[in-house]
Image (cartoon, rainbow, N blue to C red; front, side, top):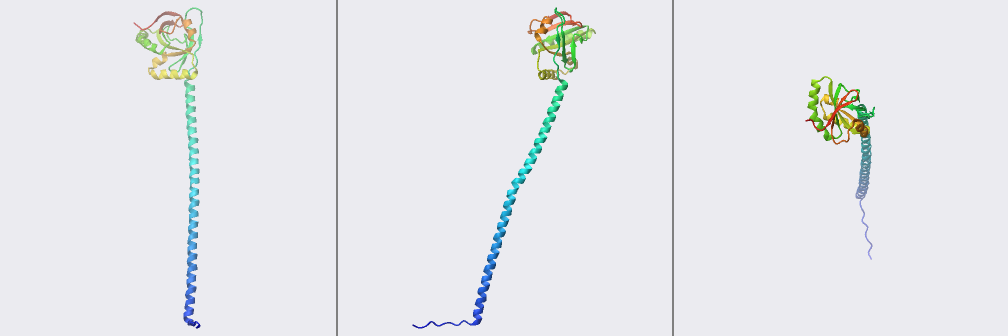
Length: 242
C-alpha cells in the first residue's frame, strides 16, 4: 500500500492562515461580548422600567390618599359650620312653651304666654294693647279661612276706635321645642304683613284647661271673643262674619 504524500505548506501561507484564525476568533469574542453587553443593558433597562412602573401606583396612591384626606377634613369642617349656624339660628328663634294659668273659677280669658310671628314673647291678658280686644281663637288650620272673614271688620273697627285692637290666637296642643319653632317659622314665612305678624300669637298649651277656662266646648269652630285687659270675656260668637 502506497504511503500518503505530505503536502508542505509554505510559511507565508501558514502564517496568514494562523492570523486569519486568530482574528476570526477575536471578532467572535468581541461580537459575543458586545451582544452580552447589549443584553445586559436591555435587562437593566427593563428592570429600571419595571421599578418605575411599580413605583408609580404607590406615588399615585399616596397622592390620592392625601387629596381624599384633605377633602374629608374640608367636608367635615363645612358640615360643622353649617350645623353650628343652624343650631345658633334655632336657638335665637326658638319658641318657648306657653304659660297657662286659670286665675279664677268662672269663665274668663286665662293667663297665657306665647310668641308672635315677630318672635316677641308676650303674656295675656296683661299685654293686650286695647281696652277692648277682639280675639280670634282658632284650633284647626282650615279655621283660618273663617278668621279671614272677620279681619276686614276688625281692621275697620280698630281704625275707628283707638281703644280697640284685634289678635289671632292659633291654639295648639303642647309640642317639643323644635316642632314649635318650625311651625312658627313656617307661619311667619306665609304672612309677610308686619301687623298681622305682630297680632298672631301661637299658643302651645293644655288645650283642655284652656277650653275649660274660656268656656269653649270643643275645637270644631273658630271662636271670636271680646276681651278686656282684666281677662273678662264680654261677648262671644262662633263661625264666619256676616
